[in-house]
Image: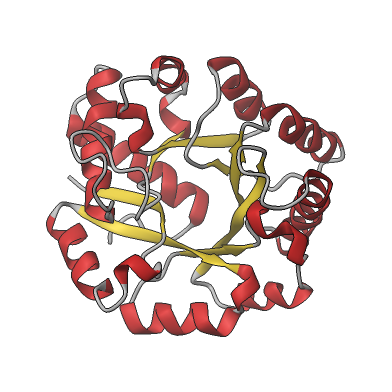
Length: 258
């Protein structure tokens, strides 16, 4: 059995000095691969250095909607000369916190979708309380034939919204939030996503699954969320692990064997 944590922040300050131990614990828990997500406003060199230090070879880089007011530098595209950078993200809209003005979020989101098309990389979408506007922007790109595919990470929408993302070719990924007691709508979405489009992630150090909620999350806990999803969907845990692993490899590239 092997799991793929498709969205982690092992470079977060909460893991300072512990990254290698965190990765070791993940491997011991059966999480064979981890994709780390980097902040594009902090530069490509620091992200590449972290990959060198840890040996991780799956990464994404992008300007988070929280930072949209800072703008986006075309220099970020230099990351994609390095094959370890598999996707552009996380990008999108976040109307929950509104740390950046909504018009700036929408402008930067569209610009980053253009950038992804320029380098033909999938995108990692962060959409929170903004599915209507996000889908409107994505529909425009889809109609123009300029969507590169990707994944809606830490999915928080309805089954109906999931259908629209799926219709445009996106994968849907679930975190520990699917295990929360108030996640009824999310459970319906998690049962609805077809086998070939579902993925698992932690979004660590956030979104720890029950019964670990309130603790710092780690990539090892992708296995906890994955087993919950497998049971929810009536699937054997090993089959679900291998299936979601294949889905991630199909989207982000690389060999099936770790």
